Image 1 (tube, rainbow, N blue to C red):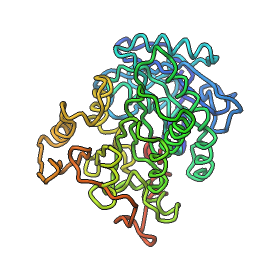
Image 2 (cartoon, helix red, strand yellow):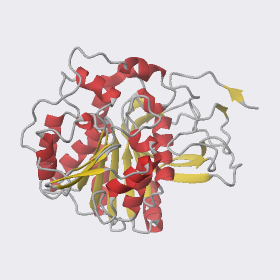
Image 3 (spheres, rainbow, N blue to C red):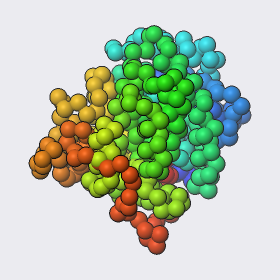
Image 4 (cartoon, rainbow, N blue to C red):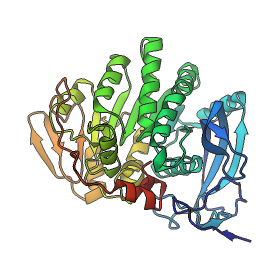
Length: 413
């Protein structure tokens, strides 16, 4: 008998990780390795809490995703009641904890199945419960079509707007554990390529761990090909110093920005009106020059429309964007490789046109998005100055939106 649950703050049932029978043979399955610094939960179906664990833990989780037509691409089909129905909902088929040695064996076996022996590491953002991060990553893997071994890194987030400070400190708490994972992937001879996708506050964790690794090793490993920074909740001044500490040999960074990101507008006010990296205008000085100098590609999603009312999860909720990310990773190429024509593909996919305007540096793509890389942007200055953005007196509806949004994306993740 199904139990209908009243919606929680996220608008969907909690504790969805209790495995159910695989009753929908046409559904897809995403099997992921989870590495976490969260503490274990005693509640069935929760698995890990938002509190901090003393040592890293690992899990093997399989998520069933309903067949095409049962949900929109870019959408996490949360169950309306428990147990989940695999024919219509995201459902957990397996959720078992692993020892460190078992996690290594899982990774080795999964990498060997990958056509290019690659790994995709995903790091979620602020205000995410454990199950939020699991289901969001499953959606990204499914909708992107990526062939890499999927590894979710989930850090202790209490899943509450009032826990912003706790969440931020939890990313610092997790830095060493993530660096340890990165170091293992760098040494593992089975792994040939590593891509990292981070969202929101998770970008701080990703960048700090890469920075630590570069300082410890003298450089970053060549097998770390792509680092994708989606809506990063990172101070632009701090980002400049992090990039400098990584040295000249660093992965291809791709920055996803959206100037209408309401969650980052709120964060900017919290952090003293300093621009957040994920909401900069890449056309403005001093950003253009610095992006070029550091060979950082920028994909401006400002005019892309997706289901997230805060405009904070477009990279995952826009089917065209997430599919393109997966295609590029699976092809073993960087997001800025112009042999494929990244900007044209997104433009055609989102608007049916490829409007463009030329300048001395090359082509700058116009609405609905702009793609910025070393071949299509002018140079970017050496210091950060004023940026047009929300002022200290600007009105924002982020707290209300975060508290009432029906999906994890609308909870400022």
